[in-house]
Length: 166
Ligand code: CUA
Image 1: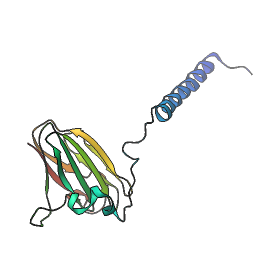
Image 2: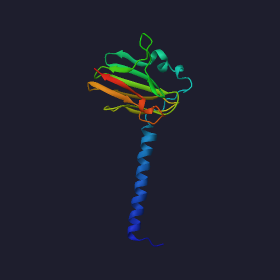
Image 3: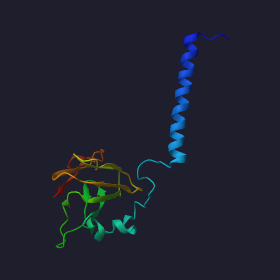
Image 4: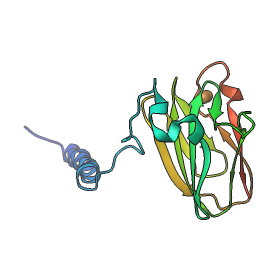
């Protein structure tokens, strides 16, 4: 069989890049143990309260110490459940001091939602059956909007909350 010179070059180039990409993916997956972000933690979506972080009293902002905060959120159509104030009214905002390490842990009982804090690098997809978590530092003062950026139904555009970094 005769192969034209350019055909040969492109074949080598094509097969070469395929092998290169597969090697990179294989190295990442099997040697470095990479996987889609935060998707190793599963949860029963019908009973998220069975998981300590998502018990009603543990939702919202928890201070571990001055440098470390945990924020547990259950996303539901069409609200981010942050737990309750002492007087029983639902908490409507997340307040975090600037520069502290914050671990966000989010799950949902119903459909796919987004968890994105505009103007920061917090941006997760939240799926029923999984716990999405992300640890970061918020190092700009100000008010940010936590919003859902996955279409989740008729009230999708109403799904947002305030985040204050003070
Ligand atoms: Cu939740 Cu869109």
